[in-house]
Length: 114
Image 1 (cartoon, helix red, strand yellow):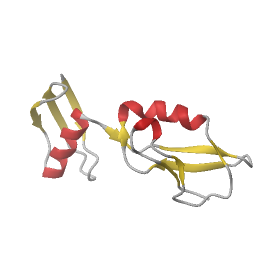
Image 2 (tube, rainbow, N blue to C red):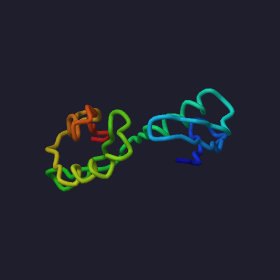
Image 3 (cartoon, rainbow, N blue to C red):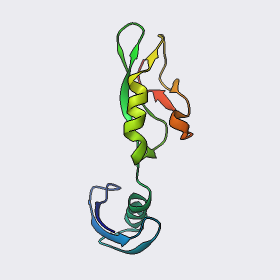
């Protein structure tokens, strides 16, 4: 398997070419710093994303929220489906947990607005 990955760690945006299998990197080229190499490795083997979204409130307003930690990229759409059915009761404060341990990932969805 081969992937071209653009690093987002810094503004340089190095374009890396990574070759490997689902569990092993055979070669990685194009990075210019150790942080970029690490990013390329993680993005190739186990990509993750911070999920940002909104949930409905009992008063009809949308409340902004996000995952407290990065989620596995493959679970993001499933998590969005869970959030589609969530309604929070106001008042709510920034940092309050909206969904604990979403989809058994160990990651909470928290409010980012009030």
